[in-house]
Image 1 (cartoon, rainbow, N blue to C red):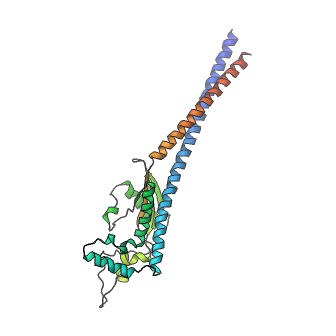
Image 2 (image 1 turned 135 degrees about the vertical axis):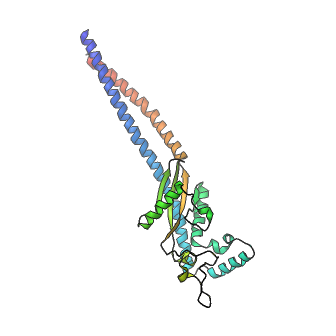
Image 3 (image 1 turned 120 degrees about the horizontal axis):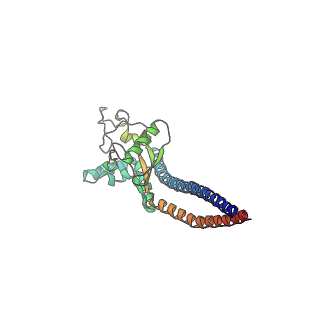
Length: 267
């Protein structure tokens, strides 16, 4: 009788230790598995956002190339815009404005983003259009500032981060100025049109003050932001399905182990 009690006590201890070990292993596996799924989902969204901002950048570059090789009659379009402005029309409604390379870029990306249900922005520091100004102290401002510093130091021209407070992914690609941008944003001493006496007023064709920037400088970024709620819902569903399959299998395995162990010890 004592030997039977001893065997029973031993088997209980072995079973208890084994169940704890299995629970730890399964839990660790779920944690690693879950982290992998979540990371993969976030990377997939980053890649999607990168594709949209790449569309904007390439569209800008193509429009710039067309302007530089004379494929766009800039002078005629500008004259048309100035004439319309005299009659009270806004410059952004002109055909000239729509051919500006950076505008071509963000217009293409914005339409694509709307089609996919994504938020597209063109945040910038000291923008001409105040709708593109970033709110001081905001998450967007910090990402834009870090991207600016990253580009200045010779790093990558894009940066993606997750705002955990709003559970939103933000991806930005730097807008780099090229030669086609200098007639509006370059050094007026070099790029501004001079009058018959050789004087210039330091303003571009539309009347904005020229900032004195150089080709290669970064001014603002193309940004795609998207909520992670859908990805989180998919993650929860995947983990629930995995639990539904794993828990019964583990329970059956433990049950078989208990029966075999007790039979072995009883013998």
